[in-house]
Amino acid sequence: MSRRRSPLVPGLIALLAGLSLASLVIGPAPISIPAALKALASDQGAASIVVREIRLPRTLLALLIGWIFGLSGAGLQGLLRNPLADTAVFGAPQAAAFGAVLVIYSGIIGTLSWALPFAAIAGALLSIALVVAVAGTSLTISLSPNPFAVTEIVFWLLGSFEDRSMVHVGLSMPFILLASFLILKASSGLRALALGEETARSLGTDVARLRGLIVAGAAIGTGASVAVAGSIGFVGLVAPHLVRPFVGYDPARTLVPAGLAGAGLLLAADCTVRLIPSGAEVKVGVLTALIGVPFFLWVIARRKAELVEAPA
Image 1 (cartoon, helix red, strand yellow):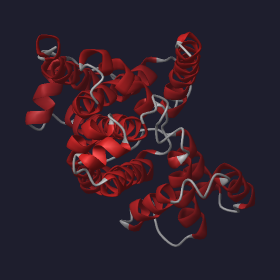
Image 2: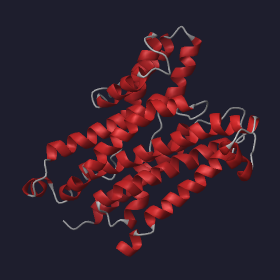
Image 3: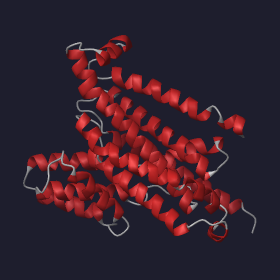
Image 4: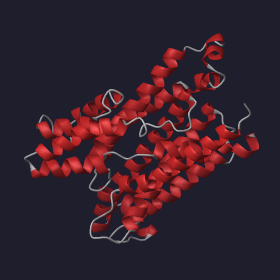
């Protein structure tokens, strides 16, 4: 198994490097790879503005957010021992979006305020209790008298890296790093939990603490991500399934590869939306939903088939 796994993480890192380079050159104004690298390293006028201020922030955000979604999805699937577990399935992105929408609509804070991630995180933490968040968000849109607020609210619902800056990277990165630390800290406990709660307790695992670490990490990561990029779903569902065959279905060993795969998925999706010919850029959250919903249904069908075939 180690021979199969050994090239996985380096391979994913190499893939991310290639996708990151592609993200810097793809756009309405194509820039060659040498020119993009030169624009990053030194002042090249308009090229540096495009690369540094437009494409670099969205590249970094896609990597960070894809990473934490993939990591959170793997953590939740390991915690619940359920291949369908994901923050999007639990409604956390929608609840986080509701928190962000509520404070924007009320005029309490601006879209670049440090309070916005906290509002989104609070929404994610309350996601189970706020199952009706989508209906509440729709009501807020219909009542909003401010056209600018409506535009911002729609952005948060659909998810996009368009017009993001390094300010947004700075807003989200501390929370995503904290969330990553919490989930990775629970990795050893996930391996024991795979044997069952009673067995995990007998091995000295504090199941309540383990659950708290993963839930808190997933909520913080989701809230911070939604606060700067809107609601983007299904990355956390898909990424763990892509890497699980290579790690022996070990929940602890799935975490880092799933995070890297999530980063690759979201960055590839962001590159793709820039290549789709349209009057306005397709929102990346729409593309991930188009991919994620069929995948979700496929996982359900496969799970059902496995249960039917299982001996009584």
